[in-house]
Image (cartoon, rainbow, N blue to C red):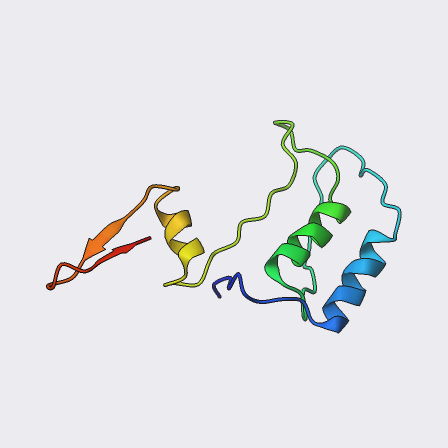
Length: 101
């Protein structure tokens, strides 16, 4: 599904994140391994990404840390920002009324 930036973690999701952030995580040994799946039930996309980044602390063979990608809900301002890489889009209707995204 698409990420909705207005969604907030439930109390259950907040407690789950607090527990995860309260654990000490070791940097994993070098080499291939299976990642995930993660249970993000009750968590916002941002909180879920934070939980995943807390768990996966090492870097890949190109020295990049794990990254989260949030796919924003169609029609939201964040969706348009993501789609157009920060470029401003100006739309005009048949009456000349403009909208900026």
